[in-house]
Image (tube, rainbow, N blue to C red; front, side, top):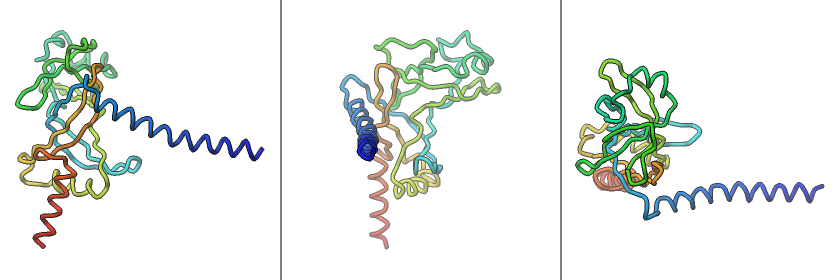
Length: 206
């Protein structure tokens, strides 16, 4: 009986180790798959605290809020349709590059072909005043080590020169519209490197 319990215990340990290892290997494969595309989204970070996931930066993107009446594929869709018919539907956002960043060119409820660059999103809110919708993306949380996350809050949330920081989320997108975080950049460098440099400057001044 003790031997069986010991074997079960060992198997549980192996399982607990193998799952995160598999996830890490799988993510690394997706990030380095040459068939995937790299895109850059202009974003506006803020920093809440999640007791279940530790420290992370929650991102707001320039493409979060869209006037859907300008989208060719949604010309027959109304605001009420979003609220009632498409509330839980996947919205495929077709992208195009503009000034080094990617913006939404069109949106559709039908999955585009693999020759089209698109990402998945979901409907969040419809504004009856300006006919816009707010989108939800599953890559809007960027995890950071606690010592970096707190500094990120100070730099990105309260800095008076926020626009000059040019916060950018770099994503890898596959043919199915799944997007995976590659890095969060500030002034063209990873936010971690930027924070390290700022901390070093402060030490030098002191």
